[in-house]
Image (cartoon, rainbow, N blue to C red):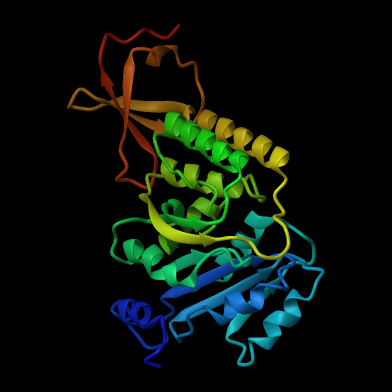
Length: 304
């Protein structure tokens, strides 16, 4: 046991245990045709009675399930089966519904993520420094040649999220994430169950005022198989997602004047925005229910 590389992780999360049977950490791995990697990935994960491991099989057609059986002799790993292929986001959602941990981690099953970075990902959440962490190869390191199209795409999405929602996330498509279970409501009424799911959850968490932090991780090259991402479809979905949630953000009708001279506006429905032409927005991130405060910088324009 002294050679266990996860001793620091075990010792750390044990500080938050209130009873012996409590699950503190759930690790969710979506999987689709990863017979060459899933066994090794699962074999390298931390194993402890306060850690729950869930694999969501998105209707694999290869030998992935047999590989899981070979490392799951004691049935410690829970496997969820999709009868049809539903997509990346849908797989994450299935895992979250079964998760019992106080903090939930999502990782890819293709071997690109290092399980030794789990402590880095969960520590800000357990320490109440963040509600949602996202692994970043740009803050950490990556050991492969990054396609120019991938980097340009992430930069573009990064700038759009920053402009429209005020949040900068560089590695915005990374699937290595951790979050407090209190933010699970952001996974309700998901509109994108494919890979655009990653961006949708950043936007929804931002609109709900949750604290997001990027953490440095290591990302390795995919040695087997090929990515299931169709770039043209992903790009279309990402732009659609950003536009759709930006319109949702503008759906503002209910507002009142505060004694401070500010106007408190609740995000509800879309109206003509001419009245807001001379207003400056600031976002109150302390509430889970989106509330926007507006400072007057010139006289209000009457609404016709």
